[in-house]
Image (tube, rainbow, N blue to C red; front, side, top):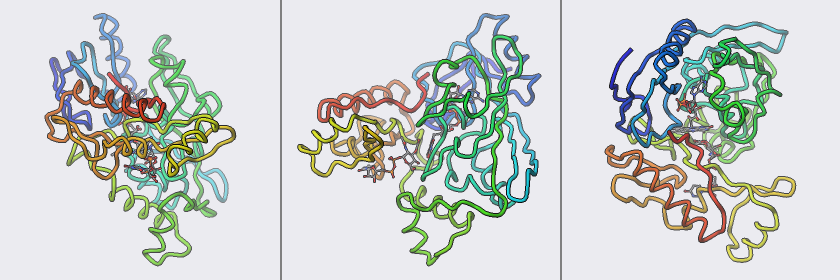
Length: 337
Ligand code: FAD
Ligand code: EPU
């Protein structure tokens, strides 16, 4: 247990805040001990995985518990399927690479997403045409009230776009201990229809890609536009892509004829990056904070010295200008602490 502990190395924004107390949990027993300490001392707690989807706006007056539970196990199911379980503290991308190395298919489009396996169900992480809900079987959680272990299957998780029960009515009630995925061993389902994957593969002269080649293409696309948190602090997309009613989209099309949109039944998803760029934010810096020059949806700690409040205030200005120009209210994706 550490006291008055700097969280700067534990959040990818690189914001310099302190926690009153900080503990690392390598086992469920250590996790329970940390929770016991919190309860005894009447302290709020906060779980941390890789710290890649949080923005600390002030010091945390409580106990931060970093989840380091490690281990991966494989259970063959049949000729073409395998169940793979990874504990919460496994690094997501290393887990994806472990599966690709064994030629297990299903996670390749989710290569290079920062963070840990245990956090992946929180917002049903997604990229390049796949979300974890597509291969998710269940996760084990610790109920923070009863300290009983429970299993949440796909239905119970109520996954949506960047959403799950853990961000809604289950918020603050559970800690995720491990996650199980169903992956393919032979007849892989190759998804290349999304965005730039096809073009990236064509550039490399690949016609019938393997899952490993899809992963490489995804990594290359991501590296070409997303900033590496090791070089400049960020938490990926700061906002969700908004979904608006079709009628609102059609009326916006009359004023902004190039507005991109992805229709879905009677609504349309609009890329927030486009809306933000149109408001003149792309690459713009105020003080220590900027919108990334290659991806307007990503807010960066440009000088490495930004406070969480500065980043938050910058995001509020973006919300206000998008609202004013387009009448669309952006919602933050990053967890504000
Ligand atoms: P943390 O930031 O540590 O935690 C996030 C939240 O979950 C916090 O509220 C925390 O208290 C809670 N939490 C953490 N672990 C647990 C647990 N085991 N049980 C219960 N609660 C927990 N996301 C995407 O979906 N798609 C992308 O393509 C993508 N690209 C990104 C690119 C970059 C460069 C960056 C920096 C981020 C990107 N993200 C993306 C966001 C981020 O990687 C994911 O949200 C990731 O799942 C966060 O994991 P983490 O372990 O770092 O979470
Ligand atoms: N666009 C612009 N200007 C920009 C950025 C984007 O005009 O500065 C427009 C372009 O029209 C582009 C479209 O937005 O075609 C979509 O951009 P991109 O393919 O980069 O994806 P995104 O919608 O901005 C989403 C996810 C990412 C995920 C990618 C790939 C959200 C909030 N973000 O970004 O996830 O990696 O798709 O699937 O859904 C994250 O959640 O942190 C994240 C990085």
